[in-house]
Image 1 (cartoon, rainbow, N blue to C red):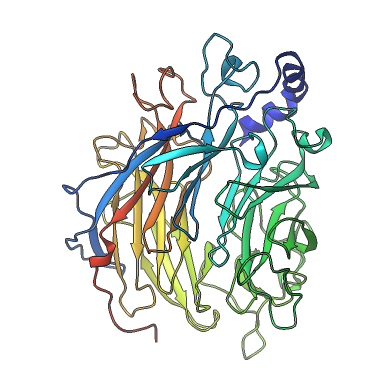
Image 2 (image 1 turned 90 degrees about the vertical axis):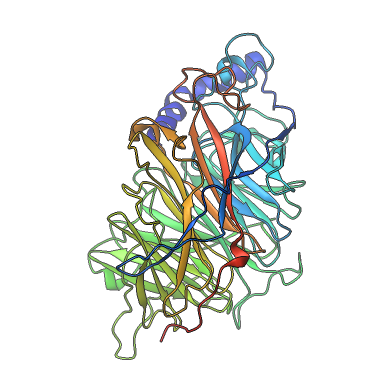
Length: 508
């Protein structure tokens, strides 16, 4: 996010001065009614993921709505009780759309320095409330969300508070760079724990994960039923990080302790990389994933190979897995790794315009695939993300060209039998093709990521942020006509998945 970095480095002092002059006032907690609309006239396509896709009709239909708040790089998670949490929710309460001087007259345009929080819905997207994690608003870019599927706790990472200063946090912890802001909530964002880890200069796009304590490992404090060990890993700085470090928490994110250096450059952490430092940056997906036995899997990319590493000591070490012949274990492609409740591995990687799914039921020793998860006919795939929930449940959200070529559609594709010999996929655009998520040319889809998650009931949810059209009536777009920075927050799902047949047979 180079625009955000320019503001943080050039305008930090001006930002603090504005806070002194006008006072930072967080926006009110307001509720927005903006229900999901389902389109039965556009049933999703069921298809094979093999080299020759065979589309078929389905009873699954797309549903789409907005949160009513401004959008940017986005994530969505579904907590254990089905609550939807959408990041970010951008508001424009003050001077020039900032948080300073809330209520002053003048244009309140959405900008890169507008404040943000979270949008939370407890009724499947029917209504949304604005949530201020740890009682504050935050820079609404490059952040991260995670919902622990076992405990139901919610975790949030933010770059920096916005505005500065705000009450409740020491000023030294609110510097626009230098701290990783980690927050945890046991109750869907009603209450929060907050800690600021020093030494992280705008750690862009870090990740959380969780897992039970491994055999012989230090057990977590009983902060929730079946309490998990929680992990956070992030780069030490934006653009040119020299290392990616991992922390663990034994009390649900109330406190964190350093675990290890995961990757480093130019000297690598893994001897299998030789003289090549591990490949990591602000946009890769090589972050740990928790397994049911308490171990953590991660992809290690260096040179022209991608290895599979596994930690069995709560992230203290990350040895690369070896095969029976002693050779380091590689994976078919560098992409996004997920682990299901039975310990099966799922790997999704982009190959041209295909998002290919590989599966392994033996800890990565052998892989089945690839299966193409992209909906037949979609092209020029842009950002994408992948989620896994239950055994065999995998979903991807992605942006791709509209058929007319005038914008980008938001796609959602899912399988409920990924481990079958011939899995079935179903997917479609959540938006109507006549009204793409993004209007205009690719620069409109200018930021780094989109979101997807699967709820405990198996429903896949996708998050996008998109263009405000002229005279748009969405609450996020009112008064923003002609503003190129204005975006609204789309949230959608596929309805009717319970009617899909699940094929018998597992990966041989």
